[in-house]
Image (cartoon, rainbow over the protein chains, first blue to last red):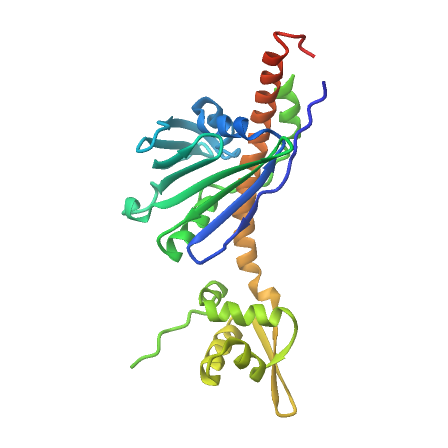
Length: 165
Length: 121
């Protein structure tokens, strides 16, 4: 069987001063996207985005439960995020807070993330709406991606092929 | 009273919703100030103030034609904002490319289970 992956760019827009909206379509049903999103050993395989190794991935998937992701970026510095689940509709919707641990007074700058999964003909559209209390927080959030050490885009096709063997 | 400093950078220039409205209005082409006043529903001095901030960062260019001042968008000055979002977008794209790999594995696993332990092909 030939494996086909749908490589595509994420779309990032800034709907309001405080929001970031990230969308992407996946060639998989939504229950699998949800599983890959909420199972620690699976999250560890993709969340690092080639920027390092994920050392901590804790997911207590229940309302009021906490999550924490830590990665060593570029083998040098630690980047940590955590939050609390606020709303859970399995396979469809996940609302949680998100705190970037690298800034002073981090808790007060928590963002609210809403993940929605919509399936159509076996494909899933994923949308993450990140809402910050302030525009400054939103802007800092986008900058945090760069601090984590931006590398040139890597072509993962080979890796994909290898992992499927 | 001292006027608040307007930092000469594209990010600050577009942080103001009215100024984004002006940029949207100019996206369709060059327009005279009067036009912008009408579209925004603001008094002329306020519109001029916003236009001045946009001019300072180069987001709009102005030229005089007869008695009219014509403004047009200069997309080049807004490129830093575009780049800034693009970098963030790229990091998510790479994350999602990896997620594709995981999903492909999950799909195959599921097919195998459904196929009641069928062949590995």
